[in-house]
Image 1 (cartoon, rainbow, N blue to C red):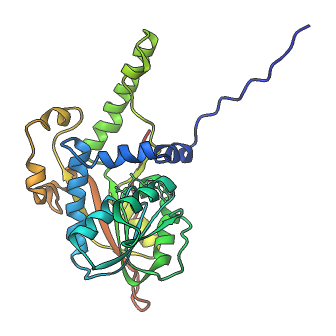
Image 2: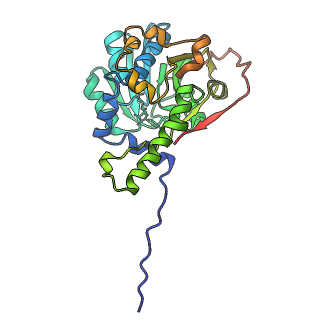
Image 3: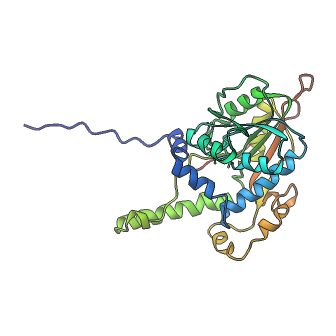
Length: 298
Ligand SMILES: C[S@@+](CC[C@H](N)C(=O)[O-])C[C@H]1O[C@@H](n2cnc3c(N)ncnc32)[C@H](O)[C@@H]1O
């Protein structure tokens, strides 16, 4: 007699599974927060991006500020330290572990925490003067997320949105060569019996990055009025070269203003920041350009 055992269907994780898994628990949250420190490429990226956000936020004296997709609260802490008393801050993230980290980092008296999805936020329309969406839109359905941000902003409110730049040499090499090479090496190592903890690899991220042109189009579509993008983490070094160079090049920390550009060097920015206004009711939205490329990574 033969017995047939039903096999578990082997399903590939969805993009949503990949995104949730990366930020789900306290250990992953701590890893993310650690990436802000030190001299590595991720720290360089964050440092330059903070400089760019500070520059754009200078136009706002204060008000109700939402940090959506706030992560472990590095920006919240930074604002409390550098702009004390200016903003009433609400920090929202889909990951409860991230929100716990924000409260631990900022203190419950300093921030209003909320667990929620950027595509369906738990706030009434017209609640905020400023919305920060840093490093989160790459994980979402951008059109829905931007519509929802436009809803919670007051007329005249400002969105400060950042996005990885899929057209920069840095990202082209990282996503097109460096990560695939690490994954291929990891497969080879597995085939020859290298222990899992010693294998190379690159995590699948679910990141979907839009070119600045395409992102501008999405902002117009959501009823927001984009301003000129500011490109940051401007670097001619690509992975893995930047991993070695970091040993002697620390100039990005002393001179972050040299790591941002609206001019000729903008193409070298591994990320960009695009401010956008929610127009006053009488302001017509006009002049938006046609969409271009989009890149799905990993
Ligand atoms: C790369 S981290 C960025 C964290 C922080 N904004 C920063 O720049 O350091 C992405 C964050 O977005 C959150 N996130 C991803 N998808 C989300 C969604 N649909 N709604 C709300 N948060 C989301 C993740 O949980 C994570 O904390």
